[in-house]
Length: 218
Image (cartoon, rainbow, N blue to C red; front, side):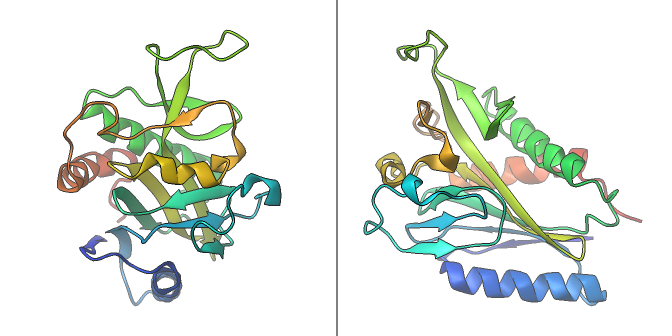
């Protein structure tokens, strides 16, 4: 069974990391179920294992946390749904690439519940939406904005960290970093796309689409 946990108050990042690590250890030991934790953080930046110092353009704007998850710099803050996925990848095929693809597919199907077409791009981590109403890039390619980030870590084949989906964060808070090391494109949110979606609406959609990509384990 997968336990769903929702935190209504903002969760400090260091507390979240400690709780995740404890849960991962318990899952591995067989004393706790897998878990999906839905929460929001206070405003901050996190640096993944591939982050470059030059991509932190405003280092004094918000607290910066070093993290051992994959990826580069990301922003977390109020209005962004963070989804920490503490799942047993060992029992789910031991294929990290397939696991990440399942996370991507889960996000895409969740966005589809709101008639948003999320897409994956080679060489660009996360989930993207096309913005044809915005001016194209200098090379003529269409403008695309990132709506969700993905970055995981594994310990003894148990995953933690996970996904963030922008519901209604302050988009200018992303200006202090080069999000995931990708310049030239922007960042968007469900509300920025003109949809009056609440955090609860998103949570319902996440639960409805989850088992399509992560069937129950026997």
